[in-house]
Length: 262
Image (cartoon, rainbow, N blue to C red; front, side, top):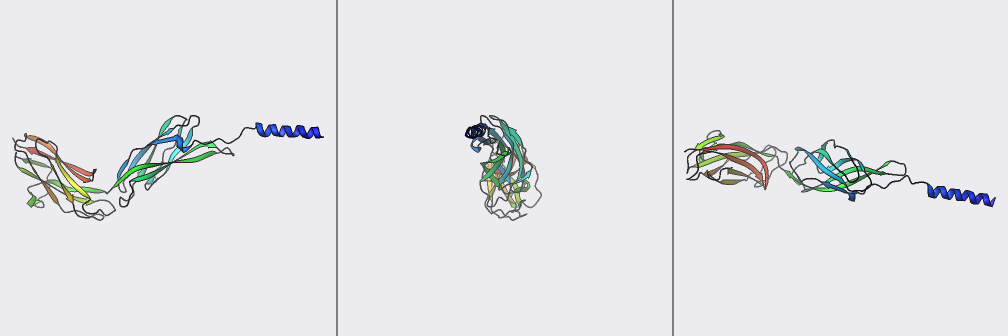
């Protein structure tokens, strides 16, 4: 009897120690490298975004890789799902809508979800990778009534025109105003308009601040910029770029054509 018990116990020990485990460790988030460009977008606008995900694990694949959140942005398009073998990389694409630019931070958190490894029940283990992303959210402001005018004293006398002819040594006047097309209030002196003559042998550039604050659908006053044409300017045509700027970021632009007489 004792011999029988001893043999039985030995068999149990062999079974317990020899059976393979059903668990498999997941790929660590530290083994994932995510590359994504900085995002610059106007408030409440939509934009397609992509991230390149590298699986640096030497053995295991990661499956169903997708974007689960991108706070404070709203994901408005279904994220693509990809499977990435060990040592490989693949792109994940998604579409977002920007929040209000007021109070928005310059960094957002991209959260990727993926499956790898299996638990005791043989089911895939879900995991996440959190990536900080530099984001710039801009007001949705646009130029309006852009064109040439007779002079700074007659900005409202006639509709703006997109083509102007002048002589060397004369001054030209460009007029414009700004409208808030977004939802959030834009404070005064936070934007400026740059008027730039493309051919620097004809003329240079000048800028003016937009001093008015604008709530939703608000507008600025009509303003003007006067630029001198050089005495020795070559005759012919050049573009004149009118750009609405917030810091170094372009919000809107329009192009005019200037003709210099012989």
